Figure 1 (cartoon, rainbow, N blue to C red):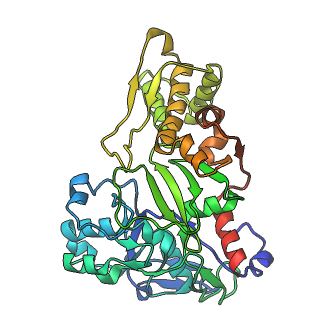
Figure 2: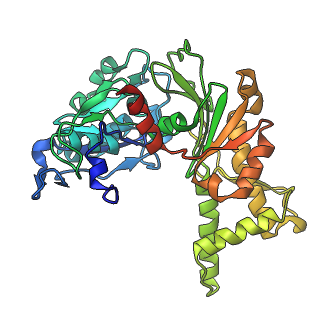
Figure 3: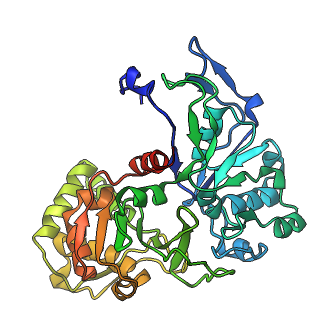
Length: 400
């Protein structure tokens, strides 16, 4: 932000923030923080703030999750969700939990900071990613959480996606005090908003993880209980609508793990190569290998609907062990996993006419793009400016 001309920042009419829905931070009320500096509000020094716990945190095991009360929600519980993490802290580190009076996602924390709030205002998009939230009623499952001794005072105040959380209470990097600030939104929904130009579009994002989504009809209402075995979830979008989402935990991170493994092997042989050089060589090798009978299932992190399903390599022969074969099979496996979660016929049945591809892994990896076009018999276009920051700006520009 500091690189933008200050005169442009003075013209900002609204601040929008987006980030990962599945995560939690805990902090004290604003009384536990200090603003300082000649231009009050330019610098923020936090006190008593927890570390960020994300969807990659593994402390909530399947056994722990199965022992929690059943939520009144169509979304299954998972490790890294805000409420499940609070339950874990309540049972394993209660003294630590008692230090804090407010909880939210990291981007909710930023909004609270900008507005000087002593509480946390959370959009329904983020609340859905916390568990124990009914997206149809827009309320927390208080009747379920209260008997379980859940610390209800930590629950944020839910508001509609696109609603304002408050106003900047001080000048911030040249943005005037009193500028409206939107409640933080999910980065996934904002990325989709930035590039889904028609309800006939599906959006495929492959970055660290991978998601394939399309818009449900306006009158769609999700079921009242989660289907833990379903690979498709329904995320709240905007204006009461939903996205059908196949949210794979394994995407570009599987390629990154392969690169990291090769790097460690080479170090053991006394060789040094940068990971960027390894990545580039992998792509070049795979582009020269247009097909392979090697099969790689790259679900090294499992999946939310099947946490026990880990990675697998099969159909190995002396003829398919080259770098090109293995890299091609890995990229194919990433897309085959997504296609298994949301098959092409499912997209066609709801009237999807094309797929909009986005994400850092797709933009960097031509092999992945080739495998997208192989896995889905639909036209694929690659969006420009497909970004959650662009999307959140568009959301509030459409509403201010």
